[in-house]
Image (tube, rainbow, N blue to C red; front, side, top):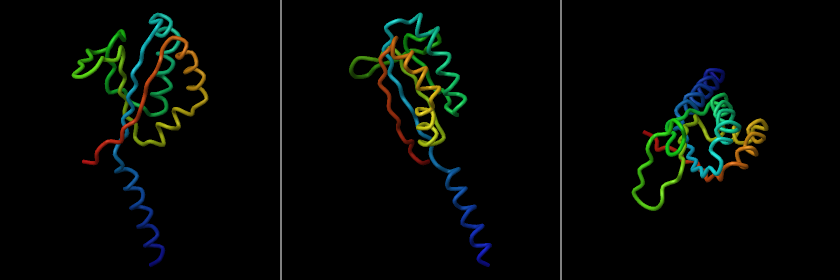
Length: 123
């Protein structure tokens, strides 16, 4: 009976982990050298993000394939990226990845970043 209860608790914990609401990551990017940013940083950073489990929901602004950014208050950012992650732990693991940290140094030569994460609302 104890074994059954333990297995049930593990199954419940697994279901809880699967039911966690995703986390949204938003980056506002002010690019000073678009050509170098596009050649040396963006494709490599995007590949690392995708490999780590991040999914792009929107890319807007001055990016080559970017959609339109519509502002309602204040000045719009030049570029905006919205990603979704399965958990805050996965997002933090990507941000701490040594490969990403190295490429981020290149990105910072060509752009200023403002970024933040928002927990989604459970449905």
